[in-house]
Length: 306
Image (cartoon, rainbow, N blue to C red; front, side, top):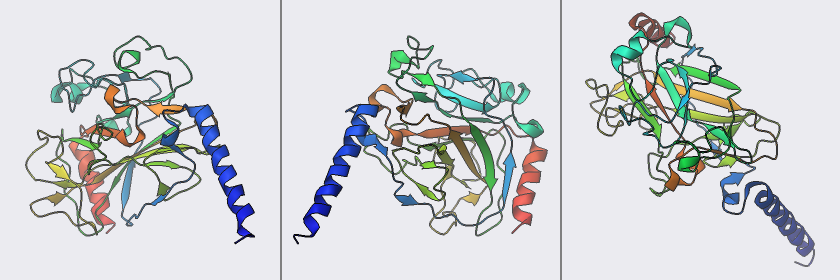
């Protein structure tokens, strides 16, 4: 027992040092939101996949709208979203306007893919006094993505049906903090040098790329392109990959976004003011405006590789 005491004291000293460093860098109120180790392991079945290249929002398409959850309401998100794909997506978007707009994606995929921006919180952004920005507590310099991957995957247990055009989806829970981290919480943060591992907190990745991954539901009710909750018309598969009764497998959308976060600088996503920029509130939305011919090709590829 005596021999173990110096080791215990040393470990405790290191823990205090790490905590103190976190407090200095990230502030006392948010130090517990940052972790240096990824504690969860992703169990990923092997399936066929199809990638659509959409760029990294080089044109900086940003707004505080949410055309899925708050259509017709300018600044309805109360935080700023980053977009790739459809160049016109905003609160005024309709199926017709999305179908007619240009896109950043290849193959004329006019779909809308979007998620909250990531900010360096020790700086000042141009929207410090604007809605969605500083007015709603989202301060800091917006950090552009280093990479964005749009990937569609097949089902591990069956063929998939094509997604219906103008299907609307959300993944993750933007109210996870005030909601007690319920079942809709699906935030997945990782580091490029630790593949297959993730956390629901902000990861301290050092010189590695900080990664956000969004997996969307892939079991469709067969009838609706949206629902009141924006969730019940498309749900997640059961353990093992099979869809629940009365739902049908469609391609699973996975959006992966990477950032070069400067080492040692504090960062946070945008959120509703009451959600305190909690990393577990990370979420993303999607509107399918892919040409039907491309969706047919995509589905055929996923099913043909089974």
